Amino acid sequence: MMTEDENSETILKPLVFRVDENTPELVKNVLLERGWNKYNEDVKDVADWNLYWRTSAFRMIDHSNVKPWQRLNHHPGTTRLTRKDYLARHLKHMKGIYGASLYAFSPLTFIMPNDYIKFVAEYSREKEALGTKPSYWICKPAELSRGRGIMIFSDLKDLIFDCATIVQKYITNPFLIARYKCDLRIYVCVAGFQPLTIYLYQEGLVRFATEKFDLNNLKNDCSHLTNSSVNKTGASYKKNKEGVGRGCKWTLSKFFAYLRSQDVDDLLLWQRINHLVILTILSIAPSVPLASNCFELFGFDILIDDQFKPWLLEVNFSPGLSLDCSTDVSVKRKLIHDIIELMHFNQTRLRKTKKESREASGLQPHVSWTGSDKDRVCETSKHWCKISWAEGKKDRDHETSGQWINISQFGQKSTIHALSRYTSHNKETCISSNIFSLLQGKAYTNDLIALQKKVKVFPKEISTEKLREKKVSKDSVPPAFPKIRNRQTTFKSFHLFPSSESCKKKKNITPYFLSDIGMRPCSHVGDFALIFPFNEATLAATKNGLDLKKVIHELQKLVNKQPTTEAEDKTKKT
Ligand code: ADP
Image (cartoon, rainbow, N blue to C red):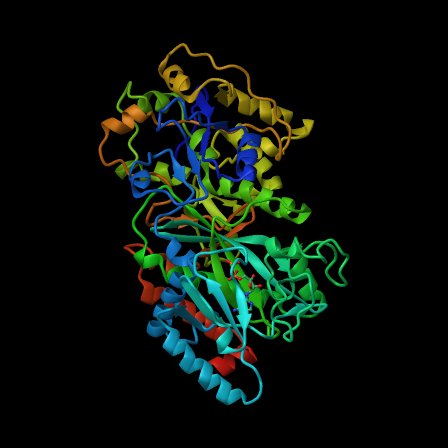
């Protein structure tokens, strides 16, 4: 394992983010708070950035041009999940192969206009079965979002569509709080499709309709749709609503606390949501194009019915990151901070010595990112590290430098512990930027001074291009360490690049990010928890391409262990 030479110095440079005109302000603000620099589009050095965050998808050329030190916030091919008609098609395909009961979380869906005849047949069959009772359907434009163009109907003659649309069984028995309907916005980060690595965010949003649920009035959007874009313009948005309060959002943790207060098994519900997320992503995983250094943040919209069965309504591409209320602020700000942590930019920087820097810049044989360097790559790319699912306490631990350290080092206490390990033993391999954020009090000043001695940092004002020049200069003297305040405000992020020159020289450089087959992903980063792979068998099933059959088999075992709800029993019988 790598040890730091007492006298070696690490030369760091600011991380740089690139945006377009639609990139959410929140993302820009969080990155600036973390000490990142904004990419200067006028400079035209397309290699001179680390993270490119766009609301829309990238072109394939952007993916193929990505450099080892860069990340893109979209993976190609993910609209297969986020367009309502594509999602329906993929889930139907999975139902066909692996059985309807495994995918029973998806409401019966028809894609219009192709499935019109099938829909009419189903509608008539149900009408007959229900007798005088109405049957309820929801019609949603395939490509629109935020509740636009949605219509709920029970009479076939009300079905009108003029674009690609889906017609879906309307869930008429939603779980209600004080007779208000709600659904869950669950954040999921696919850190890589090859190997498939899925993180589920433990916090999220619960979105309420602001008028009481009433099947006798299907035209009232504020009673049937839980989109905040619909409800925040409604008359009751600002009212203090019984059982719900003002506005239309809760945090997921408040919702689960509420369920517990009602003696509901919230853990079972969460497990079901885990399975639903994995099974949904599996439906596209084998068909997404190969791409490195990119990740995808999805927003899953999940409705819970009165049997506590989760139903997948849709998956959102670039889920909304606007801050409409204090609940948004508390959830989304941390979410973005945690995504940046999940990308592990900072691990890559603290491991590099001046010697490596010279190598990387081409003065000596350049940094190799492949083959025998795989160990180092794995040390820096901390999603994939050595963890064990099998052995008691070690479940939550991962191993670096030949010893077990608690995975919760990403949390406050143990991060500080990690820092002291670094400074006293010169051995720590996994120090995140949390260190800087957490060094708020004087108690840690000595550790900080020790860290400063190890790490020299360039000031934010110097362009990354200049830094690259400076990095190769023997006499470059970096100025002082930046002032550190607290997590949310001004700690700085810096990164040591392998120079683009060295990468140009070396053909076929394997991007180091998240693609280390054979290693294991970290189980937690911030509030992100790894949900796939979830055991040795599923880890093995990701090694040489994705063994979908094997993965589904493992999931099936888990699902079979769970108690079924009344609704599922009915689904299985039909
Ligand atoms: P959009 O992309 O426009 O937000 P969604 O599929 O998320 O479309 O639907 C918007 C809202 O409509 C959901 O948040 C939910 O409240 C309601 N809804 C959608 N589908 C169903 C359904 N099948 N059953 C009950 N309610 C639904």
